[in-house]
Length: 419
Image (cartoon, rainbow, N blue to C red; front, side, top):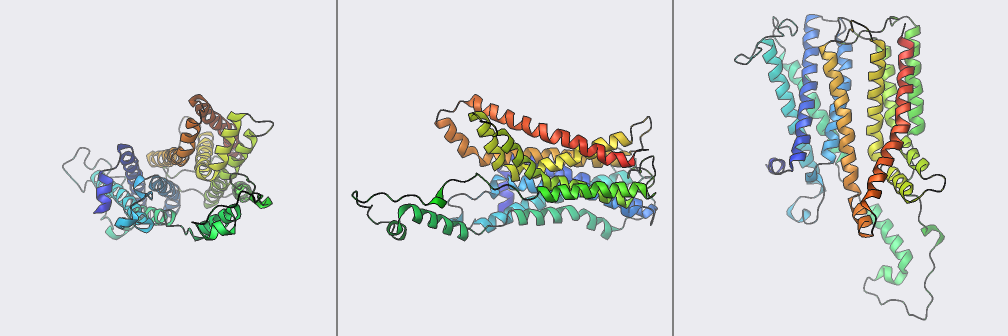
C-alpha cells in the first residue's frame, strides 16, 4: 500500500517514466505472444530463432526499467526515513514493487490488445483484424502465454532488486575514520571531545599517501569489450563463409524464415563488447579533454566525464550497439522491397527507443548526482555559461568518439553478409 501511495504522489516526470516502462513492457509482451502464435502455426520451423530475436527487446526493456528504478526519488535514502522503518532494504523493496507494477501493467495491456486483434475480445474497434496472422482458429495455450508475459516483470524486478540492494558501509566508514585519524592525530581520532594540540607544537605534516589522487580509477572493461567485439565480428565472418547464410542477406523475423544462429551470436557478442567498452571509452574521452594544458572549461568537462564514465558509459555502449545494428540492417536490406515485417519494425522501435530513453535517464541520474557540485560552483562565482559550455563540450567529445566507432562497427558487421 505504501508503494502505491508513493507512486500516486510522485512528480509527473517520474510518472511519465513509469508509463514509458509500461509501454515498453506492453510492446515486448506483444512480440512474445506473436512468437507463440507463430510457433503454434509452424511447429519446429524457426520458432526458436524468432524467440531468440525477442531477447533483444526483452533485454532493452529490462535495462530501461532498471534505469528508471535507479532514478526514482522514492528509492533514494533520506534523513529520518530509517526512524519510521524505511531503511535501505525497505526502499529497495518499494522500488522493486514499483518496477513490477509498471511491467505487469504493460504485460496486461499487451494481452488485452493481443486478444482483441485475435477476435477473442469483442466490442472494440478492429475486432479480429489480425485473426489470420495470430492463429485465431487455434486455442491459445494459457499457461504458455502467461509464462511469456511474466518474463519481463520477473526479470525487471529481479534486476531492480539487485541494483538497488543496500551496500555495506563498514569498509567506507572505517577508511574514513582512518583518514581522519591520520589528519587529526591519534588523540583527536580516539576522543571526539579532546582539546586541540598545543600552539607550541608544530602541526603534523601530511603523510605522502594522503595526497589527492585521480577522481576515479579507470574502468577495467575496455580490453574485454574489444576482445568480445573482435570475437563477434569473427563469428559473423565465419558464419557467412561457411555457407549457412545466403549471400543476399539473412531474413529478419518478420519474414517467413528464421535467421541463422551464427549471425545472431555474432551480433550478440558485438553488442556485449560495445557495452563493456563504453565506460572505458567515456573515461578516455575525459582524459583527452584534459590533455595539453587544459583550461578551466576543458578541465571541468574532462573530470565530469571521468566521474560519470561508469554511469553513462554503458548506456552509450548500448546505444552505439543499437545504432550500428540499425545501420547494418539498412545497408543489408536497402532496396525497393525490403523483407522487414511489422513485427521486425516494432522490435526495432522498442530496442532503439529503450536505448535512447535509458541514456536520457542515465543523464538525469548523473545530473542529480553532481547537483551539489554544481551548486558549489555557482556559489563560488562560476558563470552559468561555463557550466553549459562544459555540457556541450562533453557531448561533442562523446559524439566525436562514439560516432565514428558506430560507423566502423556497422560497416564491419555488414561486410561479411553483403553479396
